[in-house]
Length: 428
Image (cartoon, rainbow, N blue to C red; front, side):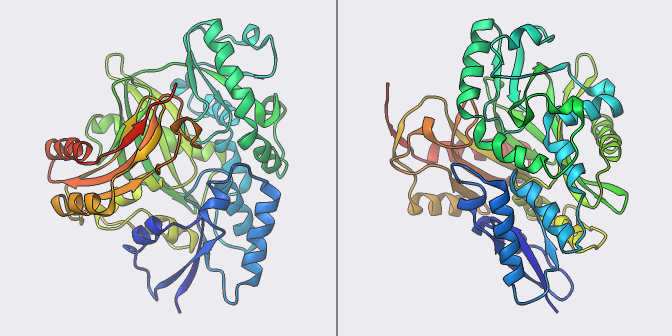
């Protein structure tokens, strides 16, 4: 009998990626709520979303065999609750929240992998004297303990920049912080983590170097990594421009160190029966390795790249674990030797007046077979008003490309940038 697999906010792109996965007996995919509700909404009510998911599952005429999460909060926290209620394999809610909450995670990292943890200090962005309580020297990063991607993350070098950053944070932090507080109410939060609730922020030491990301799974206590990615930043050093697979900028010995550190942390956090991806910074000059964060799910940014290089998307691992099966992942069975997710960026505000049309995108795909173009803006959009953009760059489109080697991959990226036409009305 085919297995019924529920995917919150399932998109057409994800359907295509999951289509590379085969399991014995087959599977049927079911969308659990939609993207606009779980990801794109202007505001979230965690308890309402949870109840709506419960109602949809109760109304389903069949067995619920697996529930998998690929999106950030609130999806990432809703799924372990639903899985527990249906007796399905999943990490415990508390172990997920320990990593979702940046302060809680940093405290656990300090206990388990102290040699890799940057200096950090928690503060209340609504406290007018917050800067007086921070013991990290300028310059440092400022970020909420929970946000999407790099949203509301700022590099600050002066008290004036700190004041400007916290003003922006105070205005926008509630969108994620308020429903995250609702989620935290489901577990016991240690006193040292509570601070200002989900509206707490972190000041963190700035670390530099080469960035890479292992991805893997923990299944019934068995730890495994199925890929490591390069995370290449753009010229300003603040935002990602490339996500390349397989990694090549970090030596294998350092990749193994990243893998080992992640395992130590996950076991300390009590994480099991789930997937993960972790992010590290390696300073080649000093040999220092820094742990940036650990995410409790596969990265969907990696999915098409795994399919291009290994022949199957990483959804295979997520589905195996969610079905209670030991995960398996093929290696280097894909069409390309290397692959990348690349951004089409813009660094100034503006109103979009033209995006690449279907004919232009189809021509690009004929020129470079396997290329996927995901438009992230539409005519009429003002870039500064788009949700979930990082603080230093606007993302116009996301490209997924493959090639025979890294030089060809880089050239293909540049050719794609030249071939895709966006136009804007300038704004003051």
